[in-house]
Image (cartoon, rainbow, N blue to C red; front, side):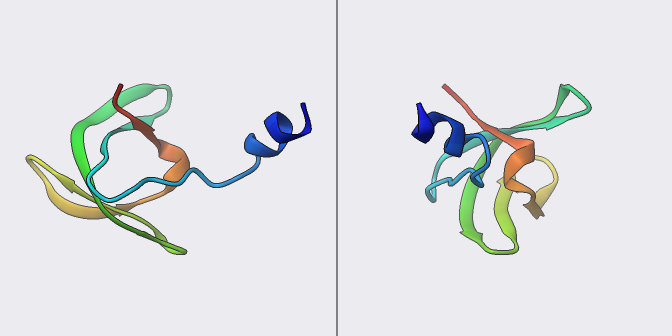
Length: 64
């Protein structure tokens, strides 16, 4: 139970190559991104149409 509670406050971690979508105000605004790297500054994601950019880990969700 304690591990579950801790997971709510941890920064999500994404491995390189993971496919992600970005959420903004409760809806998807970018899809089919691929994680390039993750640092303390954020997650570098390569988007199919808009090139690459740094994103906040909490704004991303992994594709199933």
